[in-house]
Image 1: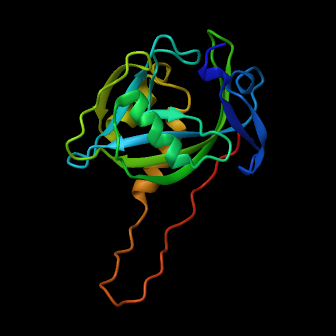
Image 2: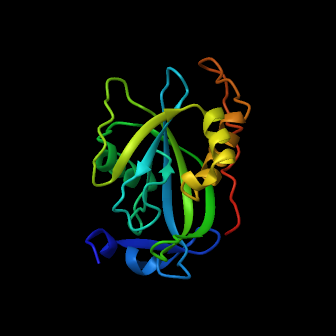
Length: 206
């Protein structure tokens, strides 16, 4: 067992309510324990493209498949955005990105090589790449990166799903739904304001 697999994750019920903890190793043994996770998309604010990463060959689950910018697990009780910021720094050398929650996607997927199972209550987060920050992948975590438009990503997922991590289609759907929502303009100073944003939608387990 690696050091990372000994870390604790937060187990949850289907509504996302905390239900205890388990090690990363134990949570990913078949049939899989439902636990809290996060999936980050970083966007180039100039072009609207999102950053994908190819998972390193040494990953115990779904190595060398393309996924969203960064994934991980918050520690039990840890703020999801704080944990996501830490993993962005560890995997890609990116610090200072402000992250916005855009939805939740619950899924189960078994890795055909290792037999490990992802069963995750996955918080999807969106942020813009901070100005002046250079993407610096950590080779032990990331095999490659590329920027892609949302239409190109959706077309790739439809044409060649086997090249992508099994959760990517679902979290991309959450992001697309968020980006397609009508935005209510913020009023000028002194005008009463009430947000009309909807709560993040949730998906049943797979």
